[in-house]
Image (tube, rainbow, N blue to C red; front, side, top):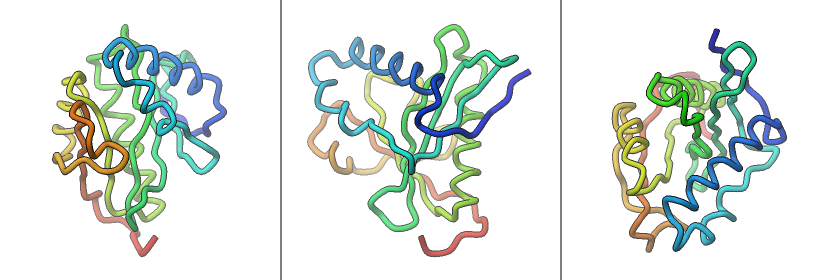
Length: 158
């Protein structure tokens, strides 16, 4: 049975998936991945989702407050390679958006890369639109930044 659990940045399954994600990025972006590792760090203010199938961790995602008012940033989306293509990432993304709505965020932004067509397709299907690259990705040709207005909820100024 698939369950999505809210957690925090010290969750050991989340930490393991972050390591696996970083390894994958080093393969996809060997020339500049070192520039991005500082921007992928999360802290106690980050919101974490870990996905389990019968208590076995299979994926994760997170969000954190972003520099624009009422906006959060999606980070650290990952699904184990043997579980990809089954809609797990879509479920994580939906739950992150729902959680963000509970916290009264109005928009979501994210950064992905040109060598991640599966991620671009996921976000596009979910209603994200490409925007100009935001800092620190402004001059990065491999980066693709996207934004989405979250569904109305109990939103107020944040």
